[in-house]
Image (tube, rainbow, N blue to C red; front, side):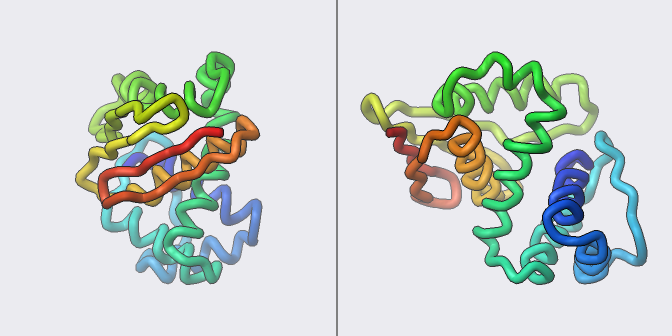
Length: 173
C-alpha cells in the first residue's frame, strides 16, 4: 500500500483526536517508536492493515466505523486538498464514483509498484449502481467509507449496501 494512505490515516487521527493516539496506534500495530511514512513509499499491506485495526482499537471504533471515518477524511479533507484539479471536474457523487477507477489508473500510472483497487460498474436502473471491487487486499469496507465520503462531499445521501466482499450496491436519491 502506498504511504499516502497511511499519511492520511495519521493526519486524520492527529487532527480529529490526538498526536498521542497516533503513537499508541503505532505501538498497538507493532511499530517501535515514531515512524515516518513517505507519500510514495511502499508500506507492507499487513502493516497497513494492522494500522487500520489498531486505529479502531485505540479510538474505540468498529472496523466499519474506522473505514467510514477514514473514507470521510480522505474524500473531504485529504484528497480534496491534494487532488484539487480532479475534484474541479466532478459534478456529482455519481460522476465521482463512476470516475474512481480511471482516477486510480491516472494517479498511479507513474508511481512505481502501485496496485490500487479496480472497480467495475453495472447500472441497475436510473438510481442504482452495482460496483465490483477488485483487489487482493480485500478492503471493500474502505471503499464503502470512501463512497460515503463522496456522498457527503456532494451533499448527496447515498444508500450503500455491502452485498459481498467484492460488491456493493449504491442507491442515489
